[in-house]
Length: 606
Image (tube, rainbow, N blue to C red; front, top):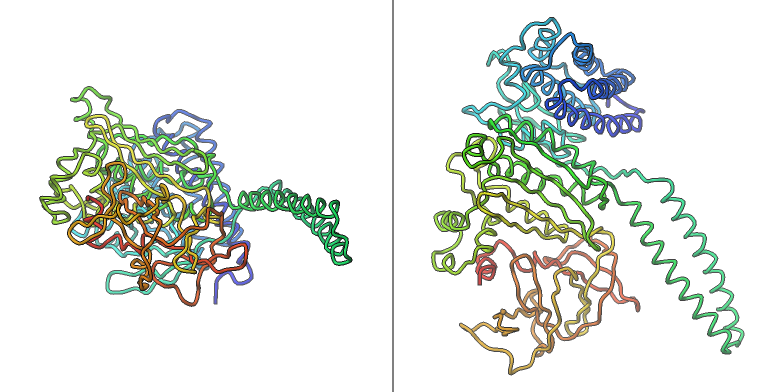
């Protein structure tokens, strides 16, 4: 039985509020390292931790209260000037906040937190007594490189308590003579709302459910309510007009009233859709606030001086997209600190400041959200990337020679690509950037990379405002309508027999001196081709450009996608309805193309 039977709502409220508070504390701690004499900042940290401790006490989470109380005492001594903040003390504090985050994960599984590692508590007591922080405890705040190097994901998820936190068991403090830390716990980290089945030395986290709750400003709900009332009034007006028409009154005035009522209803429904969409929007700062500590800990591990600068935190984005953006941003920030920025010695030799800057920003541009991760590091060399891709067998030598600089940079998104000679717990396993691209494409977005040698690298992510309403192009294959995401459509072209040429048996068209392959929609979905297509949709999916041949097109529309729960054919994202009630299948173009196939890789660099 759950330790919190009957208290589920209260527990969830605490976890939501306390997680935000702890993220704020972590960010303020990163700032405190730069401004150790800032008493107001220390007071804010103290108040945040005190609130967390109070909530833990209300839930009878005794072990969390014990750890919070010791850490709170340390903050109190710092703000009263009885202790001077030093890197070793900050490492102990960071280890404590990380362990509190682990305890959140156990609470979210409806279990009382296990006791904090005795080595960590001893380190806190030593610092409180004015003794030097134990070296082992200082090292615990940043993961050490060892023979059994923990995977980077364990480091990150241990720090931020992510929804898909893997679990891992490492040697205990008794075995290593060093206390466990948030990033290398001596006991398994429990994934939120999931049960883990431990294996020999390694436990695997079960699949977890996403958080389906959302905070909504009451003003936005009031707007939805007002619009609903207006629609109700318009419905009554339409009912009256309908009765008049049924009674035979089909004069000019009645038709005019009908036209005005339908037009008004159209405006109200559009406003209601926008209002409902806004209830799903959340400031992206709630996601961004996780990353200053992340960047700080990785930089400290690598011996670099890096500051993560955030901007545009107030930019709003669909709540469901925020969760799915987490992993791509983790990879990009990690790579910026590890691969992107150079060491202090390299920077000074190049005439730069010793401190590196990584900028994480967000802004709304039209109907898209643009997120940028930019560093001021060494930049990427396209020739080195191309050579590594050939060495790893990702592309052949002939294809590599035909690539321009932009295409060379995009090679980093191929599965298995890495320029690291040595594998570490931070990077070098050849995973990450392909995950970034795949996850962004699942959100109907795209990612671009630009780099200048000696000046730095910028990754630019472009996403739709929401996934609730999708702009599409409606096309036909025979009598069956299909929908294609409009973000992938460049233009519509007529296909005349004289325009189609054959190269190595494959159909192509030349459009403004650009040679483009032709793929029929029928062949993509596995249908028999009944007749020669007459139209083509010029598609742009990442770096892949091709013409999708169709029979005809219907037009543009904004649709709400309904998932197909019982059966989901390959390449079909879901279904929607046309105005006349016909079922329209929404195409998943990445799945149709099979982006991991050799054929598509060849098309990528054609």
